[in-house]
Image 1 (cartoon, rainbow, N blue to C red):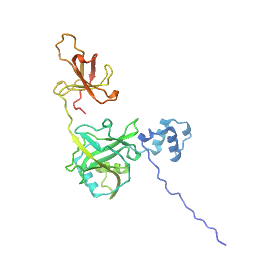
Image 2 (tube, one colour; image 1 turned 90 degrees about the vertical axis):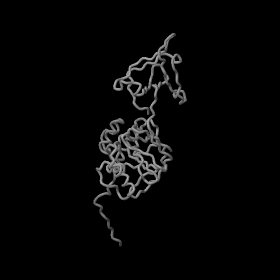
Image 3 (tube, helix red, strand yellow; image 1 turned 180 degrees about the horizontal axis):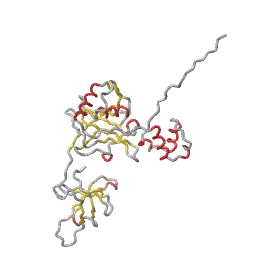
Length: 304
């Protein structure tokens, strides 16, 4: 007769809990948030009666991650240190189906943001991370950020105007996108708060057809962008040589010239994007309809 025996395990295997950021929790429904509370064993007597904002606050309290660490300022030593570390580390490219725009254009001394439209499909592990563009010889051409914005179910490629960027002699580019954990290490290495990269790193690599760095274009004439409705201006551009009082707000009233008027006729631009077209139309003098009124429109030095 076999003797019965048993083994005793003093404790369970440690379970690695997930961390959540506010940006991704804001995209979830009430039922998804309740499911996270159940899955992460966040126990609260009033979970079933909480609304979305209360559940988000509760999850962030127990399973919240820190604020994304994004590279926004230029440090020459950090730039060189990051470039050297990426060359020396063994890179394992994670399988992915990430689709990015084939061509990226950035402007010197201007931010690249949501309105540039460089969007990629939302991936939770890439929300709030750093990315770099490299040439064929693994020289860094630009440091970028991957960010999300409220109300938009996409990620956007952004860039701070304080960061240096350059084009390669041989236009063969790749973009490295760092997952969250690695992105924080990249930030630490750049800012000297972390010593070195691990000997082996895992990241996403996506080919890039072209990368261009341009200077902003200045216009010798005033430009106004109109929504197409009466007295509704989106913005106004005036050259710094045209308007001498740069530090003050613009307060002008342009109106249609009357019969016999010898004054200078206003020159106005408007877009027809709201009508299904992206064409730009120009009108001057008596061709304009109604009055164009601009009040307290801030001066814009560069045209983005």
